[in-house]
Image (cartoon, rainbow, N blue to C red; front, side, top):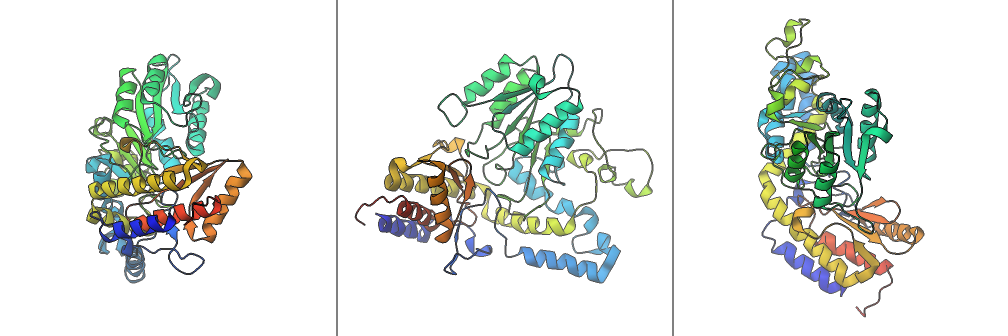
Amino acid sequence: MKEYWLRLARDRDTNDPHPGLRDRFHLPPGPDGKPAAYLCGHSLGLCPRSARTLVAEEFAAWATLGVEAHTRARRPWVSYHEQVTPYLARLAGASDHEIVAMNSLTTNLHLMMVSFYRPTPERNVILIEKGAFPSDRHAVVSQLEYHGYSAEEALVELAPRAGEATLRAADIEAAIARDGERIALVLWPGVQYLTGQAFDLRRIARAAHAAGAMAGFDLAHAIGNVPLLLHDDDIDFAVWCSYKYLNGGAGAPGGVFVHEKHGLDFSGPRFTGWWGHDKRMRFMMGPEFRPIPGAEGWQLSNPPVFALAPLLASLRLFDEASLNRLRARSLELTGFLADALTVQLGDAVKIITPSDDSARGAQLSLRIQGDRERARFVFASLASQGILADWREPNIIRVAPAPLYNNFEDCARLVAALHRYENRHDGD
């Protein structure tokens, strides 16, 4: 049975109508020295081969031009963040002036909540999902406390129904409607980090706005993974990191989307810094702050050139491959993986990610049946076989066949490795 699926995977790789760009990335070696089946793009994307060249070019500019590299480098440093803006805008479904690459995800989330969480005695609640990524929850609670509210009185967390792993869209809408008069901000993920569930952003934003609340999204697991239409979906703001599916490297600068209806309105509160100041007057060093129209007006400091260069290398590959083609390939890979898991492992592994194409991205979250110790043993066995996945307590293995560089054989290798350690003998 395992050999059948491996042959099928290799045949699909050979005849793939939506091939990725696997040869344009460095693939970490497994214990045998051959490329590992790297299924951790949801945690840290792989290194584009061209990243080294772009970083080296900036080192060369520094060495030969010094401070003048800010204006004379091949890609002038003073505006380096603008190099990635068009690519990010296409991935986000936004206009260039609604996008800026800066800071880290949680820093950006705080900056956005300064502007978009404006509590009043009557309307002060932030609605999030139960089990949100811890950093998001920490940021939310600290914002509540900064404004004089406790989590007990102003944080509402929505959990899935009893016995279910994922949230129903109707339940999200019902929760917003139920507490609507009290909700100031709905903060939601584009893709839930643990389960891999992808949400209908437009539907959530529409419900939030109908209740009189702002709608913001954490797209750490969504951008570069699923199609986004942030402008058309009337999202107020969104934030993301760039080291997962965007392959920007560890600690890569994150990104921000601010809808133009807010980006061109200078009346609201914001924390400011000199790089958000009118570009024409920035170096006049005046005391009055005049924000750049659009998302750039939320910048604080000048761009981290050496950290942005690897991200630029990756984003060029997204443009070359096209997100629509990558999305089609992603669904083919996860569909193949889900079928192989079901046929070969049955009830030993439960996929908790929704099966509906519109409700999942590249990630499948696998619940290993049995106690934690058994599940940990199964997970540990994967690395010894050249399979790099991700563990979440108490018994979840997250795998993400990223369509830019993973292939069907990677999926077949994962299933074969799980099959071997589940002691399921089918005579193959």
